[in-house]
Length: 462
Image 1 (tube, rainbow, N blue to C red):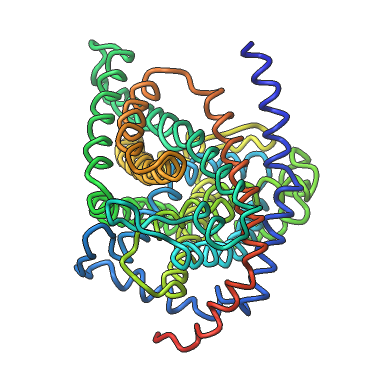
Image 2: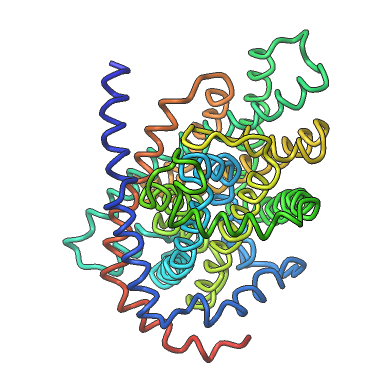
C-alpha cells in the first residue's frame, strides 16, 4: 500500500511541479506585470519604505485585526521557512549555480503575482462572526467570480487543510528537533536521555507553545510574528553576510558562475547538470515554493490587516517576495557556492550542505546559531500555516470549526517530532501544488480587477 501511494504521489507531484505548471505560473505573472505596468519596479521604493520603515511603528490595530506590518510579518512567517536553507541547497546541487538566476527571474514575476493576490484578498474579504477579517483565494473566488466558479474556492480550501498538517507543521517540527539534536550532539549534551525521548519532549513543548499562540487569535499571532520574523531574518542575514565578506574576493567569480550556469550548466558542473531546462526547472520551482507567489496563501494573512487600502497593502506583497527569494535565498546560495567544502552536483542535498558552508567558515560552534535560526524559521512557518489552515477550515465548515482544528493542528507537532516524514512531506508537497490550480484560474480571470484597482497607484504617497 505504501509503495502504491508513493508511486501515485510521485506521478502527480511530477506533473503539478513540472514544466506545464511553471509555465502557467510564469504566464500569469507576465500577464499581471503587463496589466499593472510593472508595478514591482515602479513602486518598489514605496513597498520598502512602508515595510522596513515600520519595524519600530507601534501603531495598534482594531479589535479582530492585525496592523498592516503584523500582517506582512505573518505572511513572511509562512513563506520564510526551512526551504530557504534546505531548498536552495537542493536547487543548487541538482540544477547547478544557474538555478539561482532562474530563481531571481521567478521572483521578479512573483512580486507582481503576490501584489495581485494581496490586493484581491483585501478587496473581496469579509468579516466573520467574531468580527475578524477573513479573506484569501477562497473569498476572492467566491466574491469576485460568478457562481459557476465557486467550486474552485471549495477545492482551494480543501487542499489548504490537507496541506497544512504536513508542509506547515510536521515537517517543520521535524526540522526543529533535528537542528536541536545536531547542536546538542556537537557538545555531547543529552546522550543519557536518548534521542527518541528528547524528541518526544521537544514535540510536546512545541505543541503547547503553538497552541498558546494560535488559540490566542489573530492579535496574538500578529504580535508573535512581528517580533520573531525580523529577529530570525537579521540573525541569518548577519551570519550569511559574514561568510560573504570573508570570501569577498571570490564573489565576482561566483556571480559569473550563476550567470553562465543558467545557460550552460554543463560547463560549470562538469556535465552533472546537463541541460538549461533542468537548471531552469529547479530554480523556478524552488523560487515558487519558497515565496509562495501563485499559491495565494500569504494573502490569507494580509486579509487580516486593519486597512481599507487594498493596493497599498498589496505593495507589501512585493516586499515579501523580495525578502524571501532575492535576499534570503540568494544569501543561502552564496554561502554554499563560496564556502561549502564540496558540492556534489547532480546529487540531492539539503540543509547539511548549507550548514557546511557556515561551519567551514566559522567553525563547529556556529551550529548553535544555525540551529536557533532554523528553529525560528520553522516555528514561524508553523504559526503562519496554522492561520492559513484555520481560515480554510472556517470557509468550509464555519467559525466553530476553527478551535478544534487548531487543537488538532498543534498536536501534529508531536508526530512531526517523533516520526519519519519522508512520504508525508511528498504528499503535502503535492497538495501544495494542487492549491495553485484554482488560484491561478482566479488570478487570470480577475486580472482586469487588479488593473482597475491599481490605476491610481501612482497617487500613493511615497
